[in-house]
Length: 275
Image 1: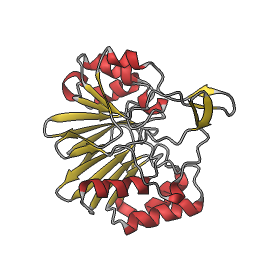
Image 2: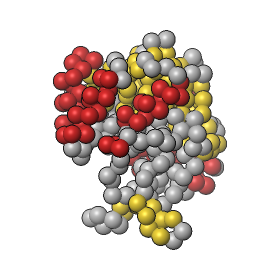
Image 3: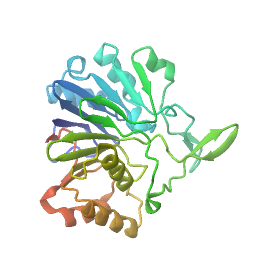
Image 4: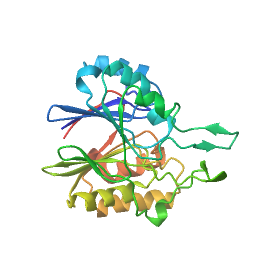
């Protein structure tokens, strides 16, 4: 299994690749390609794909959206047009809900286009439960059991029955892939809590060996106590390698680097991970 980092907040040192606030990975396994998230816009992703000699039309067979935020979904229409054929798009049933912030002003931060725009170009598979997308590669589905210390503190909102309510980001989903040496968990922003996600992946697959955890962990504004608990739980769960960036934050990255040494890897655009 090979994972390409198509877009990330960091482009790398002396790199020809473009960076952008957001995430997009391409997972290749057994001749099939699964695109995980689509960043804010398609152009930098397509630029980086050209540098990596990846052709969208022949290398992307499925698209998975981890949650509704614009920095993970904004490039979808451009990517679909570049693919040039209908492919399955897997996401949570509520991904198209109204999703907004109010500080410093009212602003929509969810999917930046209509459901119908996507349905003209792709086949939607909207499910809150686990789904095997390729052999041994699953969507985790919604994460039902969230650790108390990982409850989201984001001030984001939605509208239910005409009333503004706090949005708990129940649409946050991840991927888990089985390998001979344990599972690999791939997350976008981990709004459900990265420890909660890993524990759910273990229950889903029945494999307690965690080969690697890849993605953003959304600890950028987390307290030192939460960061400490996260690192401790990673170690207790036996996570072998950590690949992170995007929304994880410098303090959390530093703590993970200290704990994991050479088994800590900072994500950057153009990075290739062979499992």
